[in-house]
Length: 202
Image (cartoon, rainbow, N blue to C red; front, side, top):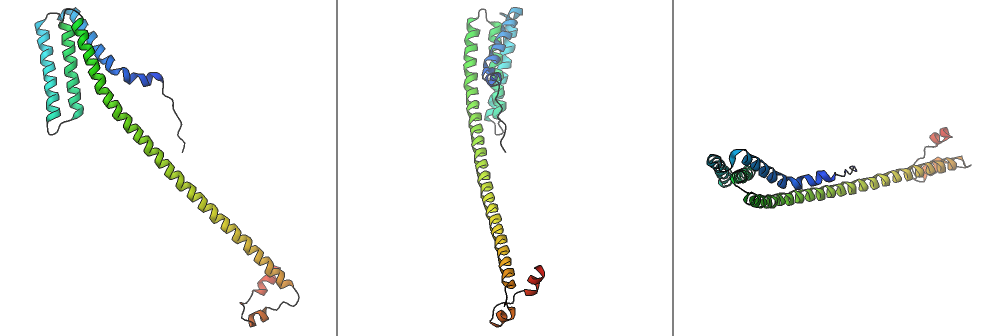
């Protein structure tokens, strides 16, 4: 019933927290590599990234406003649009000032969105833990009540067995006394005692 407590490694705890920064930093690095390989001042590359970013943003808007909208698809589409815009700026711009500014902004937005999901997950986890603890307490209470009831029944049965043994011994001792007459007891209205059976047991 007691579950083993597993301590998570600090890397497993910190890895999700570093996810947004790692994602935006990867996009920035890839954009600068693209810049060094001919994307700087390339109108065609900039136009391509603009079209792709606008298309991803349009898909996000369509997913979030439609009658069958999906929040996961909309969030993925908007994240893709932002990543494409950041990569386009990082690949087209001359210096690092604008790409770093957009990287910082994208990282802050990513952490803001992630923090909301982390809070939701934390609430669900805490709620599940509370529900599990409550269920365990209820089951433990039921088990304690059943154990007490079974103990009481065993004690009653034990006392009944002791009483029956004492009664049998008393009847046996009474039957062994001189002058004991079961017929006289029957004549007075008392129930008939099994004298023969008691004699056999003696």
